[in-house]
Image (tube, rainbow, N blue to C red; front, side, top):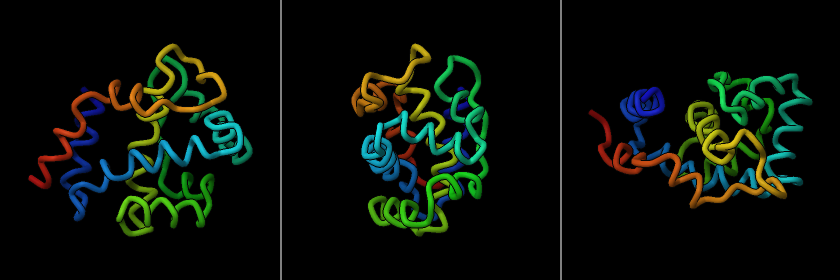
Length: 142
C-alpha cells in the first residue's frame, strides 16, 4: 500500500524510469558484501547516529525515513559511485532512490524482525516480499 505509493511516485520522478528496479540488485549485493552483511551495515548506521532508523527497518513496526544526504554519509562517496555505475544511474540520483528503496529491502529481508544468519540478504526472499514491484517499475513515467 504505502510501498506501492512511494515507489509509484518515484517512477514519475526518475528520468531513467527503471532506476529503482536497477538499484535493487546492486543494493542487495552491497549489503551482502559488507563485512558482517546486514549486521555490518547496521553498525555503520549506528556509528553515524542513525541506529534507530535502521533498527526500524529491521523491526516489524513502521519504517523510519532516511534523508538522501544522511544515507550518503553512511554509505560514503565510493559506495554511492559504485552503486550508480552498477545500476546505470547518475551518482547524484543514487541516494535519493536508495533512501526510498533500502528501508523496504531491509524490511523485506527481515520479516520476523531479525537479521538473517550471517547477515546475508536472500534475493529471492526480498524480491518475493517486495511482490509486484517489477510490474510497477515496468510502467515507466506516467
